[in-house]
Figure 1 (cartoon, helix red, strand yellow):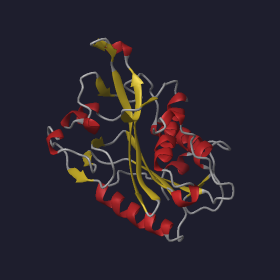
Figure 2: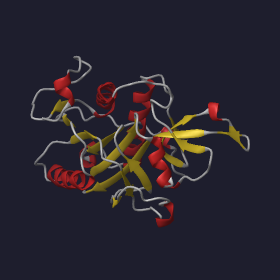
Figure 3: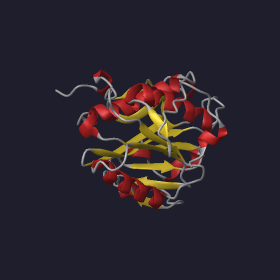
Length: 259
């Protein structure tokens, strides 16, 4: 019998591990460019030439199809549809959504993909909690969900909305792709697809702003970094050798852009 993701202990950072590089893009990043960067960096990490990387970006409006995507789940291809190569089905990316591409070496951290996914979920859940939002796992649905009693019920079951998606790929035990957390995207753009193959009416999508949390991307980034470090270990800014944990200092505008 498999262990429920809620019961899996999250990763703990290797004690002597070098810090993970933390990079934040200051402009929209084209999807094909992001794939090329991820592929090259993952290969370099596997070969021991580069440190691990978390890359925070926003994409222009687009849809991505995972390895389990169904063509009929594209309802209205109003935006380009890209083959992602990750697990999962269809999802939307666009401005106002924080995408975090996570390139970590599981050979060193522990070759357990389910535990890695559970730790990504825990990262999102802890981040949301900082904004007084209760995110939850669902064993039959990957990602992080919030209950929406304000939307009512269907057949006695409460409505739930997805606030964050997870889709990964592992190559030579190095992870690619990662998470997408809805801060303030145009939620109507999700209607062009069946997001993650979940078509029941009581399951929708939401964002922090949709939930009444007027928060900036920079504020979310600061919390994401703090909570990442609590689970995966210290981080370091791009082109720096010194740890720049936001738990130790405030986030300045110069920290937000990639350099």
